[in-house]
Length: 178
Image (cartoon, one colour):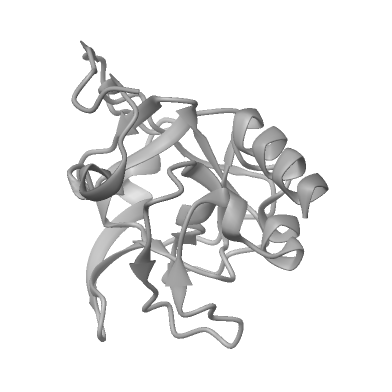
């Protein structure tokens, strides 16, 4: 597996439905910097947006895992680099947003107007070496974010089935070994 072994395919970053971009905004969040919010209520299972941004390829180990903080995984060694404003979505150990298929972000539960959007970063990363401190501050906070192989069954169930299929299979394979 070679670091920096990636190619670029540039496409657009667009939102799931006409006018959806108007329904998202960025706002300061205590102890997190900025976060992404919706100004309209979203029902469980409804599309929030579709990320069609640059796709990058590569496997990263050790410190290389930290080179590209705004990417999320969709397959083994395949990443989407999200752009503004979606780059502002924070992690949550109790997420309200998941990834349906590979690019469609959906509501995992009913989301109220002016609520911060958060998805579980662990559900889209397979790099064992990657870890970061968690600042989600929820009652189920694990204190650390890592790869999908590191999450509990409870965390997996919160996002399932709204996570890329590759990560579902990887989690299931890893949990069979434990």
